Image (tube, helix red, strand yellow):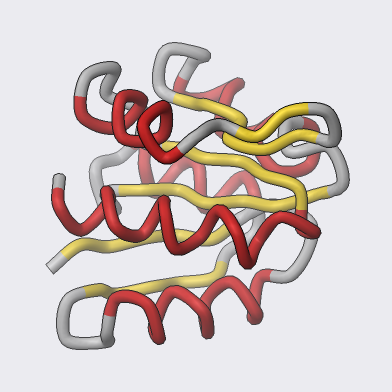
Length: 122
């Protein structure tokens, strides 16, 4: 079972609901937390992945995770001007060891299925 914490500034309940539908509650434990607590949960090894959303995909979504985990563990998968491809998302998880993901809330329906696929497979 994987454990995901949801931080960020927007759409936390929607993200949780969508992830449960995409992954299934037998395979994932999802908790909603504030940004600091969510990042600390990852830092302390109490969860596997952090997901956050905001208007930019980096600021309110990932600022605290980047501060605590470092930029080598975080990635913006969708910003107002760019969205990573499915292959790039897979690479960030499998080959680069990213554990914290930020995106713009308006890309949620497009990025969550791709992200969920590789979080479960990893």
